[in-house]
Image 1 (cartoon, rainbow, N blue to C red):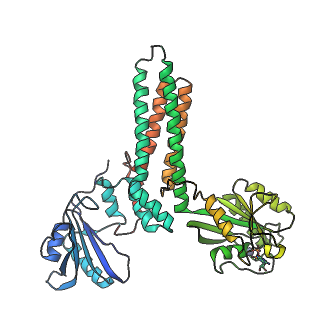
Image 2 (cartoon, rainbow, N blue to C red):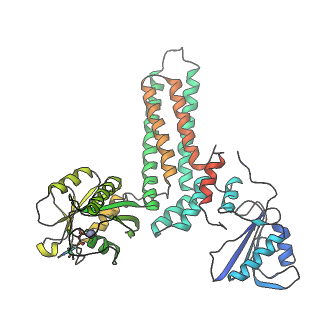
Image 3 (cartoon, rainbow, N blue to C red):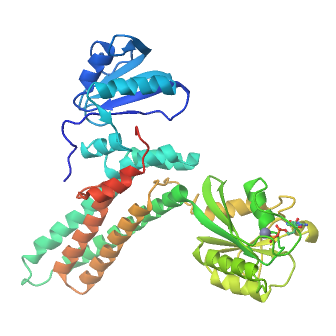
Length: 450
Ligand code: GDP
Ligand code: ZN
């Protein structure tokens, strides 16, 4: 297992670059006390906002502000931490940071404060990741999910599941010692029941984490359809501004346009593609090829059709390729007079809209949010990452294998699969994670000062 590099004291400006009402310099490590004495002339009272002058080496006042002193271990990192809250100007903060460095600190790397909090057992890995996710949250929903994870709700459920796995494994292993005695039917049935219960619990946890991952990372939605059905107009209407080129000439959107939009709190990456048709123009043929690729790679596909028109072969083909992740958007109802909202269509679940008037767009947004898994339960989502989902999936596969081995009567293999599942869950919270590479990857994506 890793431990924090002993002896090193780190310092960084913790507030974003630029000018602000206040700016914070954060210092963590054994020399934080010496830095405090150097800058403030004395150690401030612990955990108290203390008004003081911040002084340079020659005693000149750099700034005046609040000093906060958190002696170890009751601090964010678990080490001695000093925070200097001064005025938020880049020059003042640079001078203050330089003074801290001269007094024995070195510049912190991105995420290093949170990395130390993890290494000192203040946060587990999922909580540490939630710090970055809370800061980066693109919507109020995502922020709530991140906070839930940061407060440890996700970790607690992962750990509870791991403990239940461990308990069952211990019993299965104990049973191995009596392998030559006649099988106790009641005990066997009990094991089967508990395995099923663990799987059901795993499934609920997986669903909540998957919803959170969709909230965090968003869905990739491809807009496809024949030329001139209104794909670009629909993207513009959803995005609420002019981004794609809308023209009455068929085949204008040759390349794939990419737009980040927030629909009902869900971040979506929407791809506006060229029209679905066999083009003779080589430039346009390339556009059509990219449209196909976008359709194949998307989490969800909006197949835009002209309302009232019979499905064309290219549309039926696209609908088939997108089966199970398809919404047919019947556009231009301002011309046909059809009622906006959920509609019937031979190619799949449909919503009737007018990109021009905006009718039906709310229903479409609600459908996209539902597709992203939102609003399915009252439990609340955990803002999980792909990394967590992958670990959960490995745990789920091991659990399923354990149940299978149990039906075959292979108790030793049941115990082995349960151990596998337990290890996979441990990776989420960082138990047994001692690879610098994984930690490096996770913390490098933080900003400096976090
Ligand atoms: P794309 O080729 O599928 O991207 O289609 P565009 O978005 O470029 O639109 C093609 C034409 O259809 C333009 O003249 C749009 O103004 C028009 N159009 C798009 N949506 C609607 C709609 O809801 N109602 C009506 N009447 N015209 C629309
Ligand atoms: Zn277009």
